[in-house]
Image (tube, rainbow, N blue to C red):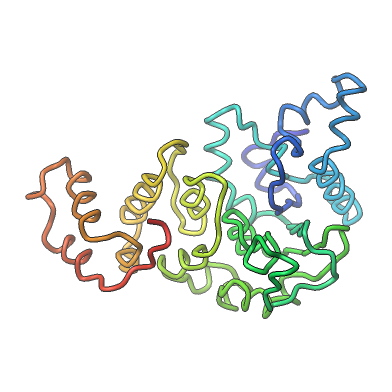
Length: 292
């Protein structure tokens, strides 16, 4: 394992893995991976029998075949015991995905060599009839950010890349073709449109539904697991601080919640809430009701 910073990271040629986490005790964590060569033979053999280890091994074998010497995988490359490192990783993840030379999307519940745009509830009963990868919050930025993303089934058989599957991906995710083909920089969608892509996605932690959108929305903020829905309030405040995108006011709060939040934001004095700002909230006549 190597740690890169600054110019080393900027010019590094690396691949990344996009996947869905399995059962926690089947994944290989940072500490386990860093101690792999020094641990006992019995512990090492048990670790190597895990599904998460086989996923890492498959990624490394694929990357090696394609000429990559470096691979980044979130399960074993983020020290989650360090809150500062975890916060840095989450705030940097979109950029790391965008700067990667290639992203491998591993669809562990797909047995076939293609992806259908039509839902199949018999095959995927727990994820709206689609492969689980399309139902998770974190994989959204992992689809949008990388320029080169290649999809593989559970046996690491190649399904296709983002370019060849663009129309299927567009149909499944409702992400515009130009975003899938060119990324967010060419013609950036509104805040409301970006958040709508996440409306049918879920995360294991409530806060991650907000944190997983930060890179897509171009904002940064510290992590605070345990804050629950307050993560969305902080995310919305940060967007307001850095953007003039008016579509944010269509994002999922009832009038009373809006007024309470505005009051708290300006120090508890409702008279200090500007009429113009409050009116922009209260004139919203429709809501996504996605995150509330």
